[in-house]
Length: 241
Image (tube, rainbow, N blue to C red; front, side, top):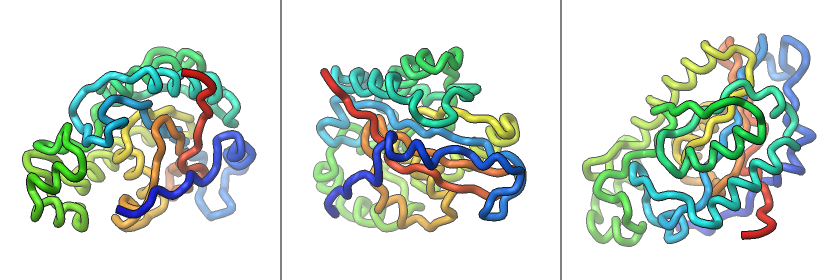
């Protein structure tokens, strides 16, 4: 595996570039008001601390994970436009909801709504295994899975299938919330998929993008089909555990 790259910038450094353009036409050519997605990855669990696949497994946040959620809740108000969050949607899994709830409370954005489209990839038989363990268990499938987004883990879900359900969710949310700002609390793969779709890039970006736990990405989707990415892997410092 390639070394993990450093995050692009902190949330605080990114605040100056997250404002939506006030005009009805963006400088990149899109028209209308975009729906802004604040894409928050959940905090640490025992599985993530041990670098285990945790798709539909439902571990709770660790002490550090709760501290990460609290840091997001304390700092997200510094991100321009978060005072306009109209809804908070979360993966139904416990680690995402435990991250979403304190942030929603801090934003005064009302109750958290679960959305199946925000679920992590179903890793099937690999759930709970490390990378090395999954490779040892199914060497040929694992090798093909790393290079082909249409390959399913044994009993699981391909990245291509995740992309399809995420695209369906995105279209529904843009239609239902035109020009609004939504906080979506999810997992690494659905967030990467939404960033990929906003960039209009190929599958290789899934393997080259690093997202820290409790990190924030911001993507905007316009009613005419255009999109832009305003932040990738913004972090909220944890001061104590």
